[in-house]
Image (cartoon, rainbow, N blue to C red; front, side):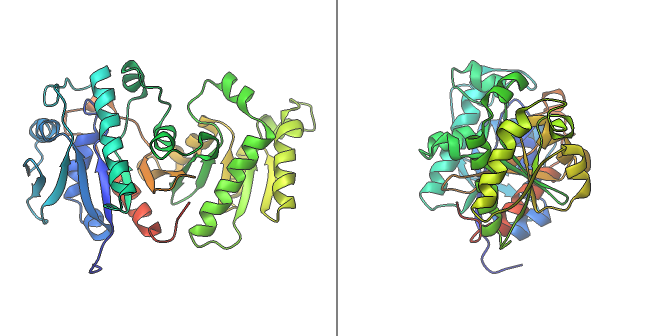
Length: 330
């Protein structure tokens, strides 16, 4: 194990979901402990609630989590009037507000230089929005908290098989198609190129997915690929980037010939990641001044508090992000 490991903040996510459970389980995972010095951000009462319900062998104090087989972990406490009294598996505005509070504190730690990166537990978008907070996922929140223009912030999904940047994210499909234009796609391509160069790939090979079947088949299945996507690809090539596309997403991804892919809408990017590596993927926000990752799965309300959740995706996300610290800078 290296003498000095990067400190990574772990906000616990939606306290009604599996976030606190997988964070506590991850603290006892040797792979996570070999990749970073974890700092838990969340409510001590919520963590105790999950530890008891899920039979996790930890002792939670006001400022640290004591584990059986590893050194204690710093706990940065964020509390509210309802913590420790959550109902597992419920969409709840108070839980949504708490989830954002945990993430906000973790971002502040990163901006102050007290941690090198953040890897957040899963959120529940409906709960956050019920709290009156406009929220479509962590990337937008991190943009707001770091005063970064949303137009330059994107989500990159990482696995052992694919790196995929989502041009649009949590929008109805009809709205995502309306929002797409050559400028937005161009910014996604540029963000993908910059991120991979900073990961140590000097000339990233970028594949851009088509919007329509077969990327429109020369207008047979729609004109958007020729009118919107192709101009963005051509402009990126003119700047010297190694970009191909638009191409039908199924054929493009099946070839696996690129370092990173640019997907145009949520499912186009998420399905290949979750089909090929359902429990070993992570999500990184690119385009902001801090390193912020999260698991690529949801808060799993249906199994919250049952001790059935796996910490594998969280450990993978932490390990992947820890490997980039000092290399990936946006």
